[in-house]
Image (cartoon, one colour):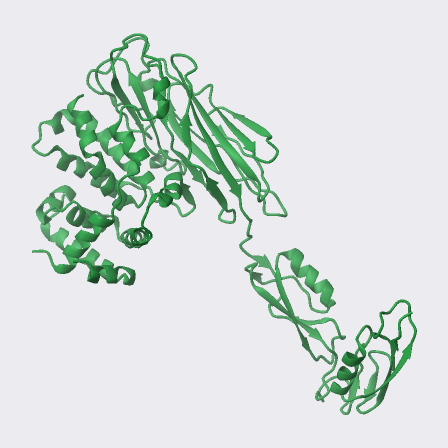
Length: 391
Length: 164
């Protein structure tokens, strides 16, 4: 009945679909979802009851509010019956048969959803920006005692952000490591403790910013008092990675000296710059004739920019500014004797070398030249250069 | 223990695995199953009396999935995704999962549901049609369209030839 292909697909689906991770599975199979359950006091009113009251806080994103992860609150309720409510709806109207109705109950209409963006990080090296990073959502009767603690792992500076709902942000540097501790103190008059299953969604809204997470969020929480259940997610270490701007505008570099052009590119964000010597009749030697990318173009920062650096007029070039049979002299200053000789020969000149002591110019480098750089001389003329003998 | 709790405990594993194939990650799967169970709970007195309550609940799950507007954003990283990946032991399996999930994610929701129901839940064409509330003909055409799309994924090809 099934084709071979279908059978193989079926076999593949069966073999490749993983088992649910324990923390996911436990939300559905255990009435005691957290390790901290051992600490839970017996419910004072009806200690024998061990019924589960599941409030299912599904994604608030159903409402299209934000990228919010759902949260499950599994409450140990006091009497028989279950209660399930579908999260995301503003008024959970669901009520299971035999739902407890005592005065101490957190009634379904008292449940509130909370959601918030807790931490904004951002820094692109030049300007600092803040973005929402962590969205959490949960559902309980009272979040008044909730807080979020952000600690810088290096300085141990703590920022305490009050309230479980709302948005707050903090600017961080790239490379900074933060420990995020989210404390939900869920006050639930209906039971000893509203055990909130953590579902913190890191909403890295900024594609430029790389957040590296370490550690699995853990829900821990000693019970403060009956009805209060602090759920702490701790150890959410995150490192703000290198911030890569998406694109940078190519600066104008033509005409600048090679050094100035290079530093202009570096400060704009281009890290890879190479140079290539090219003859140019119009651009003074050592200056940028052209760059491999036109100025103003938006480019990815990783691109290699090649700068054409003028070596002065080409010997063979007859179409330049200097008349045929002549050339504009480049500057030989700072070059070694060999370099200067090679360049002179390359542009069709003869060279005569003198030497002179100099305290400023290193041994072997050209101090001066005659005629001076920029002079137009006939091809075959002799250029005299003076090379330093040292001090 | 009530029958509802028993039911959830007994079936959540299969529901979660199906939901994982549909949504592509555990966080999404968990949300989907949670929503499903919440809906099922409301109708439990009806469902309880059915011959195959799990079939009915699966129907809720699939239809919630198809009607959900939620699309995982590329910039959203859920904890489960980050840490779940490390939990897989076998690298080849992990790669295969990613390839498969990517291929499934490329299908329209209804076709994805057909694939999961038909080849993972091993339901007949008629059963799939009933769950999706469409005709057998529609299931067949959706299924063959989805299969031909999956077939065209080169990374999936070798595994089909090797297996069996």
